[in-house]
Length: 74
Image (cartoon, rainbow, N blue to C red; front, side, top):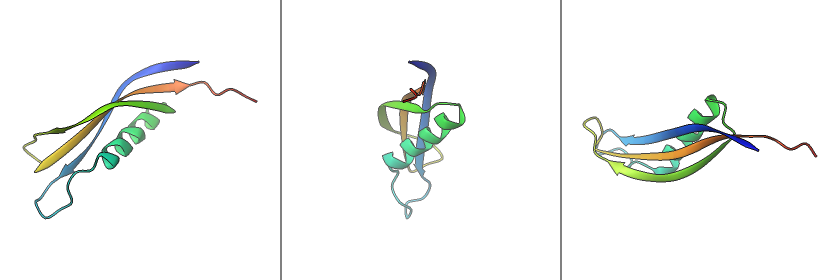
């Protein structure tokens, strides 16, 4: 059994040219952290996209559906 809690996103931004390029792993980790804070214990990612931003040289955003999954006692 599970309850859908909604959509969540995470992002990683490259602020300056000499810094590391944005990373999908960091963006997904940020989304997981946000989902956990909202009471989710599961997330299914639907995708990641490189987007243009005025604040970032390069930016990646990852989107997912967050769930609250009922634990089954054994």
